[in-house]
Image (cartoon, rainbow, N blue to C red):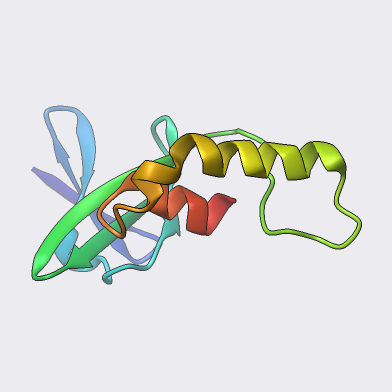
Length: 105
């Protein structure tokens, strides 16, 4: 096992893949990820349970936070995302949809 530190997180290399060490991550603090197909990673902590969650499509142009003078297209995009994933967003911190809604939308 090879260990390396990137952006304050500790990674271990197992079977040719980098894995994030849960111990090196703070709870409920999302961070941009530099590898894989997902754009962000977070260690979700709730009721004594810890879980690594990867979320967000890498390279996708998301609406981001609402801005003054935002186009109708972006408003519709945000509304569509929230409608499509509403049930999963409601599950709370232990779901990828919750974190995608909070960080990317």
